[in-house]
Image (tube, rainbow, N blue to C red; front, side, top):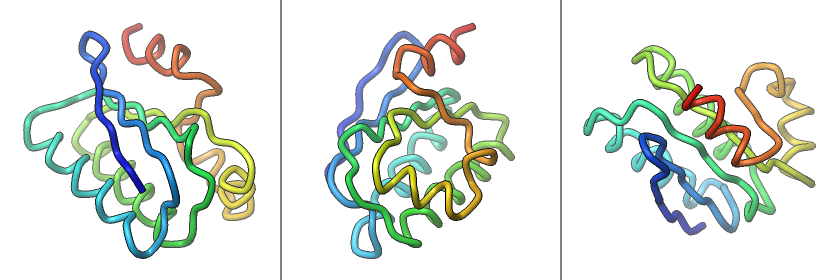
Length: 112
């Protein structure tokens, strides 16, 4: 899994690529926690390049979202597709996570 971070005004975008699994999903968790320590309030996790997720990846996303929500931070996940989308649907988390279809939509919601 590879993580790249960029910024659009006050919105931080994390581009995730590769597999979110037991061996590397902690990296995303650590990155978001460091961002929160630096008072980052708006984050988009772009999962366009994620082609596999397991229960550890799902656990990391739940941890990130619940921690950010408690801290009154905003998070959107975007570009979820294929088997990753299936896993999120099967775990009944589509309604739990704030998900948008595009990066533009996520940024718009965070800026609006």
